[in-house]
Image (cartoon, rainbow, N blue to C red; front, side, top):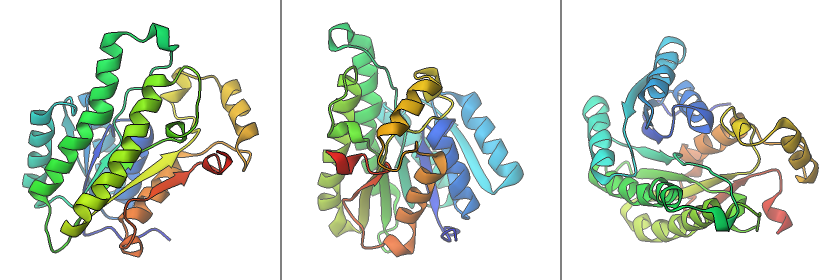
Length: 251
């Protein structure tokens, strides 16, 4: 049974495709009003239209969410449309694999900006717009690479390590202000975007060393996010929710 999120207004970053798009669709199907924010307006608008035509209510926003003023404007516009901000899902990220000697300054800056800076702007947006009585929710996207060494992922792993520490720190800092901060940590999920970086053969290989012997799905991740937003999770704070088939347990 899906949780009832009909009284929630939820802003999702990087929701134009992949895990973010599926999360937007899933949360809308739970009754939430969702803000679909993405650097690509075409993707954001397409996702919002699909939701509005088939599922529920969504609003599309476009901009570089690593920029403080952009995050502030998008969150303010969303609040003006929906009346409040109950939750933010920090999903937006750029993923590039390469050996550390090939990391260039531009790629490093972009990945750190959207992966780390945007988290701070999201917390500031939440503090500005949430209802103190209702409380606020922030959910970040972590990864098993934060605690496991995988060659070629030095930048991505560094970012996700930062996400993990940020999540725990903000849970302690914002908990007294009735804001819960958690993260979901999916492992290997062959979304259309990730299939541009890895082959199906690579995903079959990964499934072989995941304890449950399968890759994750978008549904696995979205179900976890919906749970963390539900009343059933009202005492869950600072958790890194591993949606990985047991990968983290093998550390």
